[in-house]
Image (cartoon, rainbow, N blue to C red; front, side):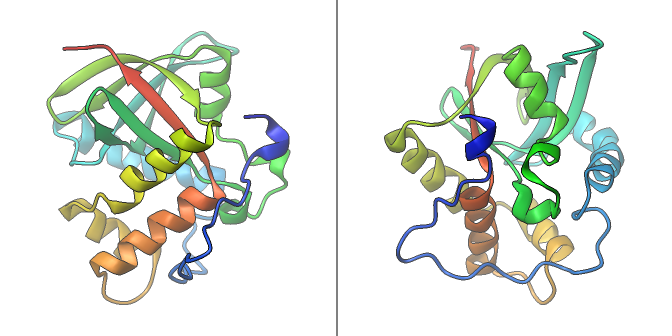
Length: 186
């Protein structure tokens, strides 16, 4: 997927409106906030990442050092689906809103993903094929685990429900950049 299509709208005809995200939450409206949130979550995720979450390790495109980021990573067999939140969520111009981890994946697609059950090596790529996008959307948006309720509470006001969580994840998927990691067999 090119930078021009970053954040392309993939909403379906029956898409529901996304839950209103908290207006003054600094952790979700800036790249710096996202890095801070990831740094706060990382020690806990290193011990035991919750289901549908993990620590993505990429190689820095400039530094060649390992870079870690806590991400929502939904497993489906030997594949993991992630979404880089798009410019709609950050409020930045498209060229400035691509996350560092995605730039790193574009430069070197070999990654490691710490998920429940261990750390797995894999190869990441942006999803552009419409059939693969549809499969990724179905897997990413329908998987709801206990930690998703806390995540929803953090991102939007009101009581989290399964439907509200799914709408939030649909919004992220439809306005973000989907990525698949083909994980090496255990």
